[in-house]
Length: 172
View (cartoon, helix red, strand yellow):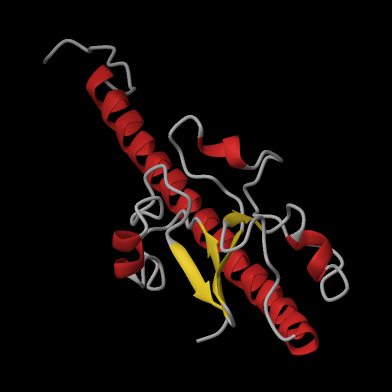
């Protein structure tokens, strides 16, 4: 008869490390998926905000005959800056802010990252554009006009430190 052995039950170190590795991978995938979902949600809000600003600009044009001048005649500037802000205030009392905007405007991209500000650009008599920086560069509407980015060197696609990678024409 074999001698009785006292076998201890438990997990080996290798088994524990494998379980910890699998759990870590699942947590990493979950965090990445959550981050992407947040980016997409902020981009959806950006589109909605730009549509409301576009509606206000169209109402302004209907009353005044042309779009607001903007920061300077035919200049690119944040929509929340003067004089654009006060010009469209009767049509949109509260100017929407980008969901990721921390309160700074032009200097937001000083560190080389995107500037999360809505921009207004009067492109000519009877036409203008609204611009925003999307976080999800794989969005179907991101960079939809690549020629614009090629013509204006400061508008880049995908956004790698430029002003915007999404724009909306307010009038053709």
